[in-house]
Length: 167
Image 1 (cartoon, rainbow, N blue to C red):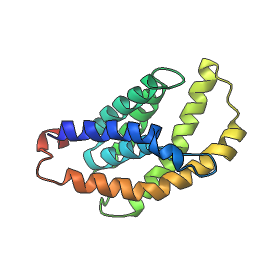
Image 2: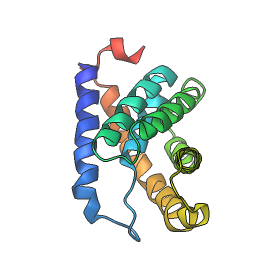
Image 3: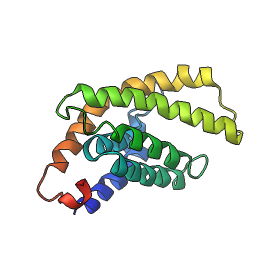
Image 4: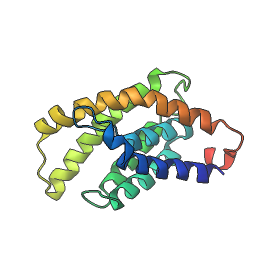
């Protein structure tokens, strides 16, 4: 059951991010809720599940309109795995945990995006990216991270989320 619920969350997120959230722009920037979902699952279920969910979310995003097929998949995989490493040592009930990881992960997302973009020849201005996107999206993601993390945390503690996917 956990597989289906997680898949449903991912698909609903992709739909909402590409439709409804377009109307909630802050200085032209929408939050990266896909990143927040990957972070949340990685913090709750660990690095392997975080990486798996990350690559699935990223590839789905890439298929539906990415710049380079596999770029988001790779970035989310790396972030999901690395955030999930901290799963066992963090206090999961803290509101600071998702904020901290959303802040760091949003910055890392764009650093990796920039490096991959340079490698494959995409013309990206780092200063423009930081000034126009990274700072605003980091603040936006950090604020929303508590809500999304809380929702996923409470959902994963329900009895219908069987233990097979949580191990």
